[in-house]
Amino acid sequence: SNLIKTIHHAPLILIIDHAKKSSPRAIALQNAGATLLPVPRLRSNSLNLKAAMKSLVRKHNVTNLLLEGGSKTIGHFLDAKLINEIHAYVTPKILADPKAILPPLTSVSPPSLIKNATDLTLLTTRRFDGDILLQYGVTTSSR
Image (cartoon, rainbow, N blue to C red; front, side):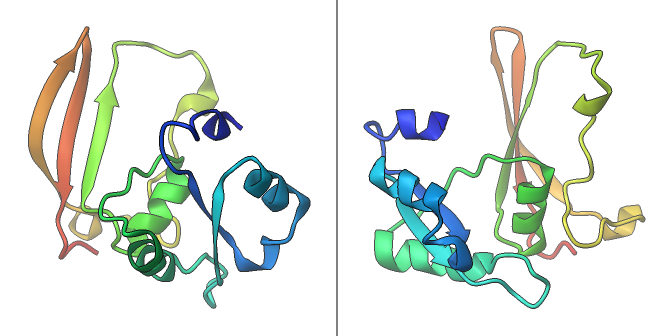
């Protein structure tokens, strides 16, 4: 994993399914220096992300978290109301891959009406060599 290559720069804490904490892959990640944070699943079968965040604060004194992931991962965190900021990078590139279109950023029930969508407030914009960073705050009353 590319994440393991960065382990000497910062701690690597991975949230995993409690049932898989003894899997060969989990053991290999631990042996490479990663800290595993096993969490149980909810009735919906998704990981209990609120329990994971509480554990990160309690056991590791984490106060800020950079979440990188695809639409499912980000969607689960949005659904659990655990995201307060989104940093979206826009780059002037056109892709010809039909798989490059993102599915909805929600995991359980994508809103079909604008009134049910997650509200974002633009906080700042910055330019980086032709790319643009849009920094949004997530409105806590959304959804």
